[in-house]
Length: 145
Image 1 (spheres, one colour):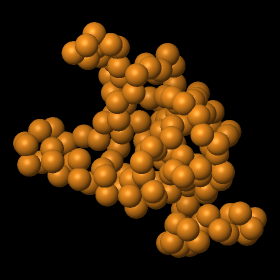
Image 2 (tube, rainbow, N blue to C red; image 1 turned 60 degrees about the vertical axis):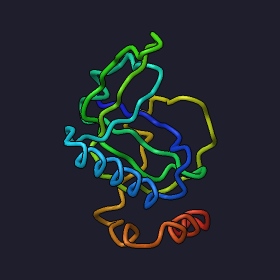
Image 3 (cartoon, helix red, strand yellow; image 1 turned 135 degrees about the vertical axis):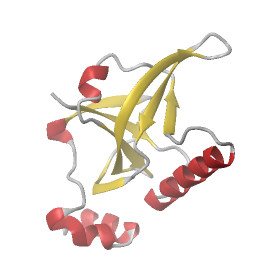
């Protein structure tokens, strides 16, 4: 059974901002001739890794809205230089907009089951994906999206 993670995207102002940060990080890796992968480091290691890697994604909450996701590729626990256990979440660098919905702030990450995930903005919602992000949020607040 597929499971997902939910995390705050601290510092990002929008999906476009998140995409720009990913592009900048990948560019630095290219310049340094390092392997090209998008990694998000977190302190806790998910205990349900098998379910997460069975098609799971990391869903991002940006500015109080659950609004995007990235597919999980790998989960790599490690110990940093200070001896603290950490975890690299390796993500597909493609950010997929999802139907936005309000979400309160929380610390760390949360599991999100498949039934609770918002749909991607594709298929019947493809027109919404082309809209500016602030317009999608406004339409969602008015229950028109």
